[in-house]
Amino acid sequence: MQIVSMVLCGFVLDAILGDPPTWPHPVKLMGKLIAILTKVLNRPTYTHGLKKCFGLIIWIIVVGGSFAAVLLIFWAISLITFVPVQAVSAIQFIVGAYLCYTCLSIKGLAVESHKIMASLNAGDLDKARYQVGMIVGRDTQSLSADQICKATIETIAENTSDGVIAPLFYLLLGGPALGIAYKAVNTLDSMIGYKNEKYGDIGMVSARIDDVVGFIPARLTWLFLLAACALLGYDSKLAYSVGIHDRKNHRSPNSGFSESVVAGALKLKLGGPHYYFGELVNKPYIGTIVPDPEEATVGKIEETIHMLYAAAIIGLLAITSLALIFYA
Image (cartoon, rainbow, N blue to C red; front, side):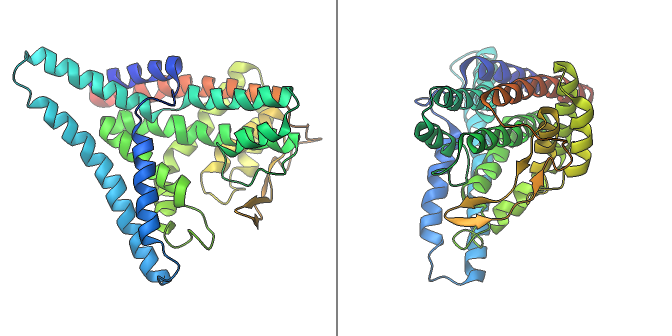
């Protein structure tokens, strides 16, 4: 029950606070550690096999270290003897709730998307390109307004799973330690999980394990987004049809599940070829059966944000209910 309470508190904190840039955040520490390890262990002179081994070592250090660090923090708090036991429990709850909060990125994603929307409404494409480049991995220097909108929508859709439902799933399954471990897995994938010359070897382990841990949450997100479509009055019939038809039209075995539902709900054609680090990557299209696909606009981004919040609340209620049954 304490884990459920921590997660609920963390969810509320995220909905209110988002991600203030000056606040301490575990993902920032993970990012710095990954950057240091990658710089040392991903040298061009190393063989492909050696870099794959180093990739496994990086994964063990970052994920294992993150999991162990949370357990160590709670253990250290339990050793406090100069305050009543109730105070120790309260400290553990506060720390746990804060860690749960840092695992979620609902409002933060919405805030960054609204910045892009504001720039587009102001006609400042250069600023919008820079802002979308902060939340996507593709090259953004020459994107059109339509492409910026689509990149933003795809990111919101994908992160409904990676940044909301998956963290909720692992937090409620194993508490803050497992939630932080998941964030480490996902951060590794976002930083070095690219299938290109630079990261293809060092990030292979991170990319494949991220696919595994995201398998169940991605499919839950598919269901929650469909429920969100019905709740919001969007085209849930087309969302379901595209969700069935195109859910596997992605290089990732998971990302297509959320993007396909959003594409159908908003009558969009997403995906397709994009440039990453100057290299053209031919990704399949999502929304291939949408009749007369509409243009991606700022309004479509807003509707995707509505789906994000609705799916997050539905997911919280559904996964919490299952957790309460499990812990009963």
